Amino acid sequence: MHRGLLFDLDGVLVDTAKYHYLAWSKIAQELGLPFTLQDNERLKGVSRERSFEILLELGGRKMEAGKRAEYCARKNEYYLSCIRQMTRREILPGVCDFLQQARKKDYRIALGSASRNSRLILERLELLELFDAIVDGTAVHSAKPDPEVFLQGAKALGLAPGECIVFEDARAGIEAAHAGGMPAVGIGDKKDLPEADLCLPGLQGADLSEIERRLAE
Ligand code: B16
Ligand code: MG
Image (cartoon, rainbow, N blue to C red; front, side, top):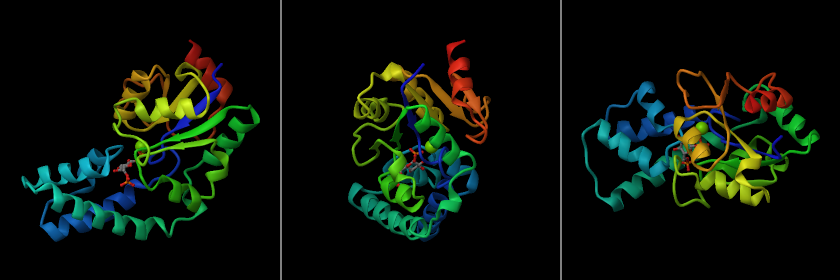
């Protein structure tokens, strides 16, 4: 039996990937770089700066650091204009019930996300008060697959890493959980997340007792 749950944001609680895609598409257009929805898959769970490097690599372009920072800031403005409009209706199916279930069972709950906008997103979704701790891109130095974000999350909950379960939709996040000594529930298909300890298509209908039982097998 675990005592804490650590949630990734994008792809687990909400689909912000579509807004990242819109914002990066504008930047790609401005720079005349090729960028498709398929390419966007490579940016999931990856930091803003690394995302832009990937975008430049796709077009075989190089750019000096100062200019890269300008484009990252502009992308974030485009992204912010999308997420400022978000509402509770965008919470992924089953998330609210699952968080309530966790609270009733006395699990502590933390966010472990690469995004520096995660607090604003949780505010827009009116989910902030369900979290005991938020660890995100504003607090972390090393991106997933480094375990830092989840180790900080466990610490913020006052728990040992082994007392926590991570919920993640990206391979790098599953790797980060394992590097930190935590089991990882993959949100998605087992073929995309082969290292996950177990996979669920989403949190809809997810049952914590069943998850604990399967993790103990
Ligand atoms: P920001 P997660 C990640 O969120 C996104 O999946 C990734 O596409 C994005 O680049 C990253 O956050 C940084 O986001 O630009 O808002 O700081 O999956 O770790 O919750
Ligand atoms: Mg994610």
